[in-house]
Image (cartoon, rainbow, N blue to C red; front, side, top):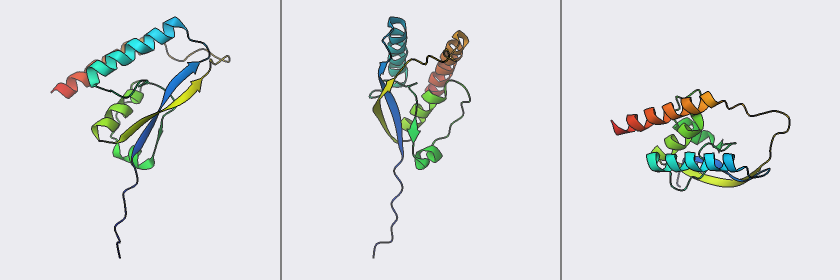
Length: 127
């Protein structure tokens, strides 16, 4: 009799934005540039929308991650930590629509904060 219990699958699911109401050139180009920079710095091949929401992950995956961020970088840290630990990372097509009720919470200073976090993470991985 085999009494071995298989470990639960550790997976992280990311959305892949198919449509966002209508494609605004600025929004699209900003995401393309950001994700290309991320690809070059962190070799995130196979992940198109690092900051896409919502994220879905199994409890086993969450418990395997050692997350530190408490700001806008948490999405990127999820992806990087999952990859580093060999978790399965998959993207699912998600249709996004413009929120007519409110504007985005993301302010220009968040971009500067995020860029600083990216630089810190890149240098941390080099040492």
